[in-house]
Length: 101
Image: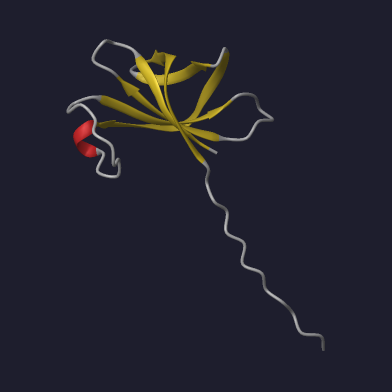
C-alpha cells in the first residue's frame, strides 16, 4: 500500500491599510453599501459596529468614541468576499481604514 502525504496549507489573509475617504449608504442605521474607488460594494452578512474604546485589537491610536464598522462586501455576485474596516472621523467623513482579502 503506497504511503500517503499530507500537506498543510495555511491561507493567509492579506490586509491593505488605506485611510481613504469613502461614501457609506445606510438603511435603518446599518451600512448597506460602500462607494470606494468609483465602484459600489454591497454589504453582505451582518456588519459589526464598534466604538473606538471597544477596539482592543487595533494597535494604532484612534479618537475615543469614534464609530467603526467592519463589513463584508462584494463587488458583484462573482467577486471575492472582502472585509472593509470603516471609521467615521470627527469632520463627518467616512474613511476606509483597511481591506482584508
